[in-house]
Length: 507
Image 1: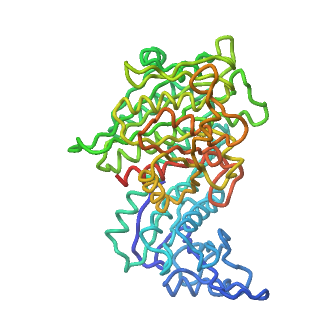
Image 2: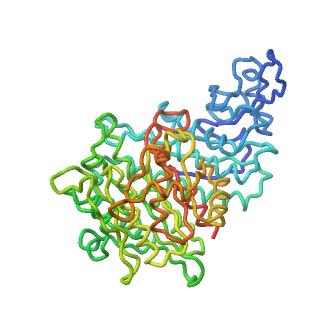
Image 3: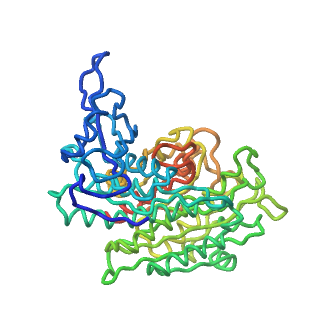
């Protein structure tokens, strides 16, 4: 999608479609109070073109509500699309993001390939944050998952122009616009990886895709397999992959900005299970096809590293993605087995893990990934994984789960959410939960029972970070959009890319 930023008067822009935001300014809570929609633009000609539909009462400017006007009088655009934000008093950058996605998804099936989106004019909506939100929303809306349809027709929007008021701070908006194009492209890069079927994106092929991206944007990279896992004594990681005919991939990406040799080293660790059958503890067949997205955490780290390489924050970053298939076979690990995780140092034994359920495999690969990131020099850690169904039970499809062992690192991540617009809810850790994963035969077991499953999974990972400041993101509920929305297609969401990036940039 070609993108550009314009400061030309709205009414004079020649385009196939001009999208303008509207909001309901009605503040009365009386039962018979009617919506009072207004356009969030100062362009008098555009306001006049939409005046009759706004006055008709047919259009209420509800969130993502649209109405299309053909050949609007006094406006150079061939079509005028109104997109609602809902109540003006509750308008946020997140709603602008969704409105931009709605506009893009509105034009795609109609064969309209050129779209101008007017930045809203409102004291409640700062121009810079709205610029970021609008561009992100446009990229989110432009993605569709029908990659392998034989009759697929490319409906991508060819040109997206963000039209800002002439009186805007051009330097600030141009910088925000350029940055957010990179972020939007990186989020869609992640979504494209997550969307791939397991037979089209094996661990080896995921490693190749990551390496190709790294070479294109200037990241250092390494991709290892079985021999390296054995060399590093990654018994937990290897135990997951041993049941599959596909070899594992240990993917390492490095970002080292010039002139930065001191300060923190941020470690990004991602679960990359390219297909999860559950192993011997096999999953029910219903919806198992979705388990191709069990590598969404690893894909988020790869997408975040792409954005990091292009935006060039002045902090060193290492990403470790542990990719494998979890399959049942005669060589697969079994419930009751005991595995030995990677030791942090030669004089330290690896933790022993009793396998209770082979479908609790994500925490096994992350255990060795977190240890390896620390061994490579990471001083601060963040991991992302579609780790537990328990987190979805707790938070539904609205928030992803987050955990941390350090208040300072959490404060930075929490602040990053204000920019990213993504929803994470912090859940607790504690000794009482840690008791649930103690093993009678080894050090720990890989499940702690039914209750508090997302928390005991986090406690399992906490064993391997020790005292290193750390954040764990359980994105199981948000990595896949279950039903299409006006602003995003059903399928992979690319969640966590924006939040991880903003967290990195905070350093």
